[in-house]
Length: 127
Figure 1 (cartoon, rainbow, N blue to C red):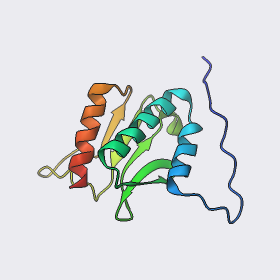
Figure 2 (figure 1 turned 180 degrees about the horizontal axis):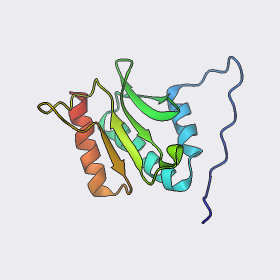
Figure 3 (figure 1 turned 30 degrees about the vertical axis):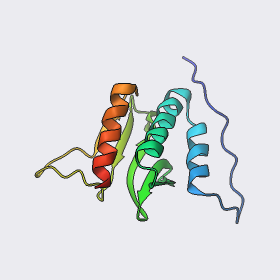
């Protein structure tokens, strides 16, 4: 089985500063196609649902911050050689439901149904 890989992103030189959006898009572009398609759609969902979130890399993953703190992130399957990608939320996400609630979700496909669920979770997480 052959993986389609995007060209590796060029290393940043000393003192070369890029914005979070550029870093996130470069990271997504370097993912294998099966992750890249989901990551780009996830990014698009964030842009449409919560445009106030700021993209940034967080532990080498695309993440989106509110008030300087990561609210949610996308973890590619290839990053940990997993069978599924993950999108998750950090502590500041307003997802609390009683004494137990999910903070991360496995993602094998990202179609319209999943997009609607993610958009609803993002809206809820924003508070």
